[in-house]
Length: 157
Image (cartoon, rainbow, N blue to C red; front, side, top):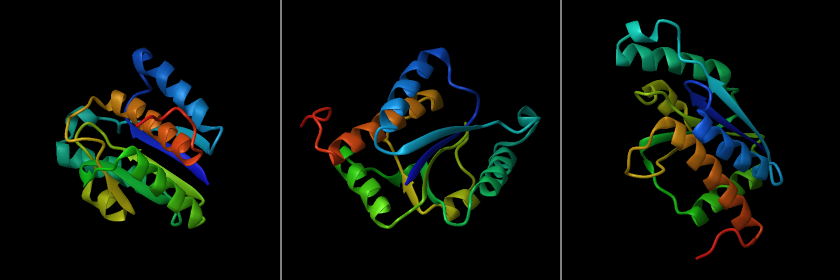
């Protein structure tokens, strides 16, 4: 199974880049993983929040393949413990999912059409995080889940 992390916005800021690269490299020991930064649409500043979400959503839906398993990160999603995230990832692997896509939306969230297409909607926390930090938290938590699956010592209880 391949893992893909998609995020709408700019490339990682230097204060996040090192951590994201570190955890992405670690995940590669367990699953093939790749990042895709989806650029904000041109003229984004001229669009309403709803129009911007819609335009971003159209791009996302074009990028997705029919068989991709989409996990949308959204504040209204279900929260998972690290152990449950590990189980979730293992279940997708057991289902022979070829590509598991974790999607971080833009500044105003995800369009309803993307949320409808999502196979699962996940909330990292009830807290609000900057999008750049969400990328780092996502990479770290997926790495943690991988170590849980292999019963390695990174995760302590």
